[in-house]
Amino acid sequence: MLYSPDEIRERFETFFQSLDYSHEPDTLYEPVRYILSPGGKRIRPVLLLLATGMFSDEMENSLRAAAGIEILHNFSLLHDDLMDNADMRRGIPTVHKRWNRNSAILAGDVMSMIAPRYLSDIEGKNRKQVMDLVLDTFIGVFDGQQYDMDFETRNDVTSEEYIEMIRLKTSIVLAACLKAGALLGGASESDASLLYRFGEKVGLAFQLQDDLLDVYGDPAVFGKKIGGDILCNKKTYLYISARARANAAMHEELDRWALYDGPDPQSKIDGVKAVYDALRVREQSESLIGALFAEAMAVLDEVSAPAERKTVLKEYVNSLMNRGK
Image (tube, rainbow, N blue to C red; front, side, top):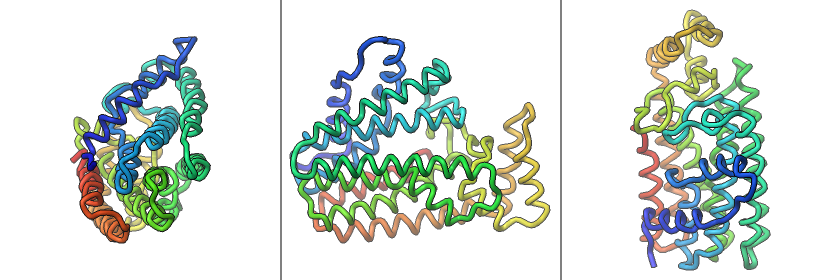
Protein backbone atom coordinates (compact mmCIF):
# COMPACT_ATOMS: atom_id res chain seq x y z
CA MET A 1 0.00 0.00 0.00
CA LEU A 2 1.33 3.44 -0.94
CA TYR A 3 1.14 5.96 1.92
CA SER A 4 1.43 9.74 1.58
CA PRO A 5 3.94 11.64 3.74
CA ASP A 6 1.06 13.00 5.85
CA GLU A 7 -0.27 9.49 6.45
CA ILE A 8 3.22 8.30 7.31
CA ARG A 9 3.72 11.18 9.73
CA GLU A 10 0.35 10.50 11.41
CA ARG A 11 1.16 6.81 11.76
CA PHE A 12 4.54 7.60 13.31
CA GLU A 13 3.06 10.24 15.64
CA THR A 14 0.47 7.80 16.95
CA PHE A 15 3.19 5.24 17.63
CA PHE A 16 5.60 7.79 19.10
CA GLN A 17 3.13 9.33 21.53
CA SER A 18 2.13 5.86 22.74
CA LEU A 19 5.66 5.18 24.02
CA ASP A 20 5.99 5.08 27.78
CA TYR A 21 9.55 6.13 28.64
CA SER A 22 9.03 8.35 31.70
CA HIS A 23 8.98 7.66 35.43
CA GLU A 24 9.88 9.60 38.55
CA PRO A 25 10.98 12.30 39.16
CA ASP A 26 8.49 14.14 36.99
CA THR A 27 10.69 17.24 37.05
CA LEU A 28 13.16 15.32 34.86
CA TYR A 29 10.65 13.88 32.39
CA GLU A 30 8.42 16.92 31.95
CA PRO A 31 11.04 18.69 29.77
CA VAL A 32 11.53 15.45 27.82
CA ARG A 33 7.80 15.18 27.11
CA TYR A 34 7.81 18.88 26.18
CA ILE A 35 10.49 18.56 23.50
CA LEU A 36 9.08 15.26 22.17
CA SER A 37 5.46 16.42 22.14
CA PRO A 38 3.50 16.61 18.86
CA GLY A 39 4.18 19.61 16.68
CA GLY A 40 7.52 18.94 15.01
CA LYS A 41 7.69 18.07 11.33
CA ARG A 42 9.14 14.62 12.11
CA ILE A 43 11.23 14.90 8.95
CA ARG A 44 13.67 12.12 9.86
CA PRO A 45 11.04 9.52 10.82
CA VAL A 46 9.04 10.33 7.70
CA LEU A 47 12.12 9.88 5.51
CA LEU A 48 12.93 6.58 7.19
CA LEU A 49 9.40 5.26 6.77
CA LEU A 50 9.14 6.50 3.19
CA ALA A 51 12.37 4.63 2.41
CA THR A 52 10.92 1.47 3.95
CA GLY A 53 7.72 1.97 2.00
CA MET A 54 9.66 1.98 -1.27
CA PHE A 55 10.42 -1.72 -0.72
CA SER A 56 7.88 -3.07 1.79
CA ASP A 57 4.53 -2.44 3.47
CA GLU A 58 5.80 -3.82 6.80
CA MET A 59 6.56 -0.87 9.12
CA GLU A 60 6.91 -2.22 12.68
CA ASN A 61 10.71 -2.40 12.79
CA SER A 62 10.97 0.93 11.01
CA LEU A 63 8.69 2.62 13.54
CA ARG A 64 11.01 1.49 16.35
CA ALA A 65 14.09 2.69 14.48
CA ALA A 66 12.42 6.00 13.66
CA ALA A 67 11.50 6.52 17.33
CA GLY A 68 15.08 5.97 18.45
CA ILE A 69 16.44 8.36 15.84
CA GLU A 70 13.83 11.03 16.61
CA ILE A 71 14.73 10.94 20.31
CA LEU A 72 18.46 11.18 19.54
CA HIS A 73 17.83 14.01 17.09
CA ASN A 74 15.84 16.00 19.62
CA PHE A 75 18.49 15.33 22.26
CA SER A 76 21.09 16.86 19.92
CA LEU A 77 18.82 19.87 19.25
CA LEU A 78 18.24 20.40 22.96
CA HIS A 79 21.97 20.66 23.65
CA ASP A 80 22.57 22.63 20.44
CA ASP A 81 20.01 25.23 21.57
CA LEU A 82 21.70 25.33 24.94
CA MET A 83 25.14 25.98 23.43
CA ASP A 84 23.71 28.64 21.11
CA ASN A 85 21.56 30.13 23.89
CA ALA A 86 18.64 30.01 21.45
CA ASP A 87 15.30 31.39 22.63
CA MET A 88 12.91 29.52 20.34
CA ARG A 89 12.58 26.14 18.65
CA ARG A 90 9.57 25.26 16.46
CA GLY A 91 7.85 28.44 17.54
CA ILE A 92 7.97 27.68 21.29
CA PRO A 93 10.55 28.49 24.00
CA THR A 94 13.56 26.20 24.12
CA VAL A 95 13.89 23.87 27.10
CA HIS A 96 16.55 25.91 28.87
CA LYS A 97 14.39 29.04 28.52
CA ARG A 98 11.22 27.28 29.70
CA TRP A 99 13.04 25.66 32.65
CA ASN A 100 16.78 26.27 33.14
CA ARG A 101 20.16 25.16 31.81
CA ASN A 102 20.64 22.31 34.27
CA SER A 103 17.23 20.86 33.47
CA ALA A 104 18.04 21.02 29.76
CA ILE A 105 21.35 19.21 30.24
CA LEU A 106 19.82 16.44 32.32
CA ALA A 107 16.82 16.03 30.02
CA GLY A 108 19.20 15.60 27.10
CA ASP A 109 21.26 13.08 29.04
CA VAL A 110 18.27 10.86 29.79
CA MET A 111 17.05 11.10 26.18
CA SER A 112 20.41 9.75 25.01
CA MET A 113 19.79 6.70 27.22
CA ILE A 114 16.14 6.22 26.24
CA ALA A 115 16.74 6.19 22.47
CA PRO A 116 18.85 2.99 22.27
CA ARG A 117 16.00 1.06 23.93
CA TYR A 118 13.91 1.42 20.79
CA LEU A 119 16.81 0.72 18.46
CA SER A 120 17.50 -2.50 20.38
CA ASP A 121 13.88 -3.58 19.82
CA ILE A 122 14.49 -3.86 16.06
CA GLU A 123 14.17 -7.45 14.85
CA GLY A 124 15.56 -9.28 11.83
CA LYS A 125 18.86 -9.83 10.09
CA ASN A 126 19.64 -6.11 9.67
CA ARG A 127 19.21 -5.28 13.35
CA LYS A 128 22.90 -4.83 14.22
CA GLN A 129 23.71 -3.09 10.95
CA VAL A 130 20.98 -0.51 11.55
CA MET A 131 21.94 0.00 15.19
CA ASP A 132 25.61 0.50 14.27
CA LEU A 133 24.62 2.89 11.48
CA VAL A 134 22.50 5.05 13.80
CA LEU A 135 24.99 5.17 16.67
CA ASP A 136 27.95 5.87 14.36
CA THR A 137 25.87 8.59 12.72
CA PHE A 138 25.26 10.45 15.96
CA ILE A 139 28.94 10.21 16.89
CA GLY A 140 29.47 12.01 13.58
CA VAL A 141 26.86 14.60 14.56
CA PHE A 142 28.80 15.40 17.72
CA ASP A 143 32.04 15.60 15.70
CA GLY A 144 30.29 18.14 13.48
CA GLN A 145 29.06 20.10 16.47
CA GLN A 146 32.62 20.43 17.76
CA TYR A 147 33.79 21.67 14.37
CA ASP A 148 30.94 24.19 14.44
CA MET A 149 32.09 25.43 17.84
CA ASP A 150 35.75 25.55 16.73
CA PHE A 151 34.80 27.64 13.70
CA GLU A 152 33.37 30.39 15.91
CA THR A 153 36.89 31.56 16.83
CA ARG A 154 38.36 31.29 13.33
CA ASN A 155 38.19 33.68 10.39
CA ASP A 156 39.96 31.34 7.98
CA VAL A 157 37.26 28.66 7.69
CA THR A 158 36.98 27.50 4.08
CA SER A 159 33.78 26.61 2.27
CA GLU A 160 35.07 23.02 1.99
CA GLU A 161 35.49 22.81 5.77
CA TYR A 162 32.04 24.23 6.28
CA ILE A 163 30.42 21.78 3.87
CA GLU A 164 32.09 18.88 5.70
CA MET A 165 30.88 20.23 9.04
CA ILE A 166 27.24 20.43 7.93
CA ARG A 167 27.54 17.03 6.28
CA LEU A 168 28.35 15.68 9.74
CA LYS A 169 25.84 17.78 11.71
CA THR A 170 22.87 17.42 9.38
CA SER A 171 23.34 15.40 6.20
CA ILE A 172 24.41 12.09 7.64
CA VAL A 173 21.32 11.88 9.86
CA LEU A 174 18.99 12.20 6.88
CA ALA A 175 21.20 9.78 4.95
CA ALA A 176 21.17 7.25 7.81
CA CYS A 177 17.38 7.47 8.09
CA LEU A 178 16.98 6.68 4.41
CA LYS A 179 19.50 3.84 4.44
CA ALA A 180 18.11 2.35 7.65
CA GLY A 181 14.56 2.54 6.33
CA ALA A 182 15.58 0.90 3.06
CA LEU A 183 17.46 -1.92 4.81
CA LEU A 184 14.52 -2.58 7.13
CA GLY A 185 12.26 -2.71 4.09
CA GLY A 186 14.42 -5.39 2.47
CA ALA A 187 16.30 -3.24 -0.04
CA SER A 188 19.57 -4.42 -1.53
CA GLU A 189 22.80 -2.99 -0.15
CA SER A 190 23.24 -1.15 -3.46
CA ASP A 191 19.85 0.59 -3.25
CA ALA A 192 20.34 1.37 0.45
CA SER A 193 23.71 2.96 -0.34
CA LEU A 194 22.21 5.01 -3.16
CA LEU A 195 19.58 6.33 -0.77
CA TYR A 196 22.35 7.23 1.68
CA ARG A 197 24.07 9.29 -1.05
CA PHE A 198 20.74 10.87 -1.92
CA GLY A 199 20.23 11.80 1.74
CA GLU A 200 23.71 13.31 2.04
CA LYS A 201 23.12 15.64 -0.89
CA VAL A 202 19.60 16.54 0.21
CA GLY A 203 20.93 17.16 3.72
CA LEU A 204 23.57 19.57 2.46
CA ALA A 205 20.98 21.46 0.44
CA PHE A 206 18.61 21.38 3.43
CA GLN A 207 21.19 22.90 5.83
CA LEU A 208 22.35 25.53 3.36
CA GLN A 209 18.69 26.47 2.91
CA ASP A 210 18.32 26.59 6.69
CA ASP A 211 21.28 28.97 6.92
CA LEU A 212 19.75 31.11 4.20
CA LEU A 213 16.39 31.24 5.96
CA ASP A 214 18.09 32.23 9.22
CA VAL A 215 19.00 35.50 7.48
CA TYR A 216 16.31 35.91 4.83
CA GLY A 217 13.35 33.83 6.04
CA ASP A 218 10.00 34.79 7.53
CA PRO A 219 10.19 34.14 11.31
CA ALA A 220 6.46 33.38 11.44
CA VAL A 221 6.99 30.53 8.97
CA PHE A 222 10.54 29.57 9.92
CA GLY A 223 9.59 28.98 13.57
CA LYS A 224 12.43 30.88 15.20
CA LYS A 225 13.93 34.35 15.26
CA ILE A 226 15.85 35.54 12.23
CA GLY A 227 19.54 36.38 12.56
CA GLY A 228 20.57 33.90 15.24
CA ASP A 229 23.59 32.70 13.27
CA ILE A 230 24.81 36.28 12.84
CA LEU A 231 24.43 37.06 16.54
CA CYS A 232 26.40 33.90 17.43
CA ASN A 233 29.11 34.68 14.85
CA LYS A 234 28.44 31.39 13.10
CA LYS A 235 30.72 30.69 10.15
CA THR A 236 27.93 29.81 7.75
CA TYR A 237 28.32 29.43 4.00
CA LEU A 238 26.95 32.96 3.63
CA TYR A 239 29.57 34.38 6.00
CA ILE A 240 32.45 32.40 4.50
CA SER A 241 31.43 33.44 0.97
CA ALA A 242 31.19 37.06 2.07
CA ARG A 243 34.71 37.03 3.53
CA ALA A 244 36.02 35.40 0.35
CA ARG A 245 34.48 38.15 -1.81
CA ALA A 246 34.93 41.14 0.50
CA ASN A 247 37.39 43.98 0.03
CA ALA A 248 39.42 45.37 2.92
CA ALA A 249 36.70 47.79 4.03
CA MET A 250 34.08 45.04 4.09
CA HIS A 251 36.43 42.77 6.05
CA GLU A 252 36.73 45.52 8.64
CA GLU A 253 32.95 45.89 8.73
CA LEU A 254 32.46 42.16 9.32
CA ASP A 255 35.16 42.16 12.01
CA ARG A 256 33.55 45.15 13.73
CA TRP A 257 30.16 43.46 13.88
CA ALA A 258 31.73 40.21 15.10
CA LEU A 259 32.99 42.10 18.18
CA TYR A 260 29.73 44.00 18.73
CA ASP A 261 28.10 43.30 22.08
CA GLY A 262 25.90 46.34 22.37
CA PRO A 263 22.29 46.83 23.41
CA ASP A 264 20.82 46.60 19.89
CA PRO A 265 21.31 43.10 18.42
CA GLN A 266 19.13 43.96 15.44
CA SER A 267 21.70 46.51 14.32
CA LYS A 268 24.29 43.71 14.10
CA ILE A 269 21.92 41.55 12.06
CA ASP A 270 21.13 44.43 9.71
CA GLY A 271 24.78 45.42 9.40
CA VAL A 272 26.03 41.96 8.45
CA LYS A 273 23.05 41.40 6.16
CA ALA A 274 23.91 44.62 4.31
CA VAL A 275 27.37 43.23 3.56
CA TYR A 276 25.81 39.98 2.34
CA ASP A 277 23.46 41.90 0.07
CA ALA A 278 26.26 44.01 -1.38
CA LEU A 279 28.31 40.91 -2.20
CA ARG A 280 25.33 38.91 -3.55
CA VAL A 281 26.17 35.89 -1.43
CA ARG A 282 22.49 35.00 -1.20
CA GLU A 283 22.46 34.29 -4.92
CA GLN A 284 25.68 32.26 -4.64
CA SER A 285 24.17 30.14 -1.89
CA GLU A 286 20.93 29.60 -3.81
CA SER A 287 22.94 28.39 -6.81
CA LEU A 288 24.78 25.79 -4.72
CA ILE A 289 21.53 24.64 -3.10
CA GLY A 290 19.98 24.12 -6.53
CA ALA A 291 22.99 22.16 -7.80
CA LEU A 292 23.04 19.84 -4.78
CA PHE A 293 19.31 19.22 -5.05
CA ALA A 294 19.64 18.33 -8.74
CA GLU A 295 22.48 15.92 -7.92
CA ALA A 296 20.31 14.29 -5.25
CA MET A 297 17.45 13.73 -7.68
CA ALA A 298 19.84 12.14 -10.18
CA VAL A 299 21.01 9.67 -7.52
CA LEU A 300 17.41 8.82 -6.56
CA ASP A 301 16.67 8.00 -10.19
CA GLU A 302 19.22 5.17 -9.94
CA VAL A 303 17.36 3.43 -7.10
CA SER A 304 15.56 0.30 -8.34
CA ALA A 305 12.19 0.91 -6.70
CA PRO A 306 8.77 1.53 -8.28
CA ALA A 307 8.61 4.96 -9.90
CA GLU A 308 5.44 5.97 -8.06
CA ARG A 309 7.08 5.26 -4.68
CA LYS A 310 10.14 7.28 -5.61
CA THR A 311 7.85 10.11 -6.72
CA VAL A 312 6.33 10.31 -3.22
CA LEU A 313 9.83 10.75 -1.75
CA LYS A 314 10.78 13.31 -4.41
CA GLU A 315 7.68 15.39 -3.77
CA TYR A 316 8.18 15.27 -0.01
CA VAL A 317 11.81 16.38 -0.21
CA ASN A 318 10.88 19.13 -2.65
CA SER A 319 8.27 20.42 -0.18
CA LEU A 320 10.95 20.59 2.53
CA MET A 321 13.12 22.79 0.35
CA ASN A 322 10.30 25.33 0.03
CA ARG A 323 9.63 25.68 3.76
CA GLY A 324 10.00 28.98 5.56
CA LYS A 325 9.87 31.15 2.45
